[in-house]
Length: 209
Length: 385
Image (cartoon, rainbow over the protein chains, first blue to last red):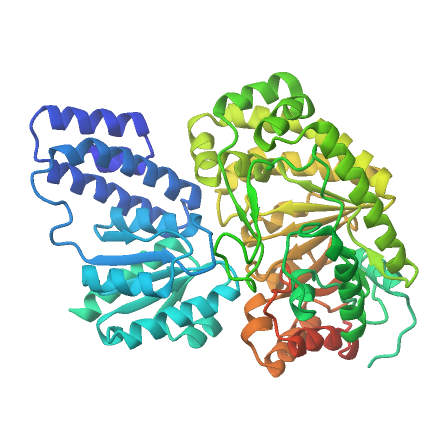
């Protein structure tokens, strides 16, 4: 087994960077190196689920993954996301909280999804336009405030009006999102945990197949 | 309604002392809701057009009357004493006001985090202490001189004390005489949360040493602020230290020791410590038993398990909260009553409980739901063993 997954799982930044450079210099398949980084992220996720790692470890692992991607990407001959499931992601209209959404974006990339991150304060029409442009089967919306619930609902209405609702699975997330909010908005799933958000997206992939 | 034999202040103090008051006290954290309810612009505390402040103060008083009154208030009107430049580390960020920057006018006030501190600043704090560091940092990142900041602080404190007097004359307790933002929260807001987490991973000893260097000034600043306000209550802003963010080893070795030093110092002065916990602190509850008994309030925002808090902290510190914001906004009145009765039945058993919103009553809460929360505290008796 490559050392990269272990080093990444141990959050050893310098060692991961060294190993990635070493393998790139040796002419290894960059896609294989990237997949090893993703395996490292999977181990981090397992440790998080087991309660051994916390959000801070997820953030640090995400940083290491991003740094590794910067080294690997120039060497990739094909798009790393060629066969990846696309996810449109953003913090909803009126809400400028980005941390939770950013965490999910990194975790989704680490899990092999192609993420189209629209940023914060995203209008419903912008979500719809991106869904149309990318054909993404998954929409993730984030919001930390109670008025954001109506923005989520409004966006889902816009997705319906665009005729996309039966083609797109929708997950909402945020610290105060509850079952009540799920019912209010009409989304398919909710979470207050970034990694669970990734699990939900993986489940969606199985459901839309 | 239950018969009453105590004033609001007596009721709240009884809960802090883990005694059984005549009924469960009610102390919602309520500010933006009031503004929206009264059709005023939603602005940050002591923000917006000062010409509107008298209307905002009146709105707070009138809304309290419409809701039937509280036993304690957190923010006394337009402000609370958080304006101390020496306490407010995250000065580099920006409050985003609804109606500006494209944010809908009926949204909440939000805080835009910016990276305003470098890793090298940890070393400056270690060498020079917090106040000395802040004398350079604050004008640099805000463009406001310390003289201006001091003058604004003094002016706002004057308004605050006037407002406090209004409530105190009505036997309503004022729960904040100073606000202190925890060391980890302060640094993470100045560095941004992701950068702070990476700092902790890369150079934990450096971050720890900076936090240790902050504590003496935080203690002194807070004591001075409480003396100036005349209100011996300290609110701790605690969010970014919980088990929702950090492993317990970091909490135990780096964060909790600083919290304990602060709480011990304030308790020795006879202050009451309101530990305002946002995010899920359930994993951290056992540590709180090392804080002095009957000196703190564990205030929860609905994301921690308040029932677990009762199991672990009951008999040691008062518990406050935690009616969920989503319930106040989207729930039915019956659902609110059901939840509040459960809080009283379980967390309120044998005293030591203050009914409150989970963090702030959201601006879009339904009036009838907020009223139901207030009324349930006054109507539903807490059981005794």
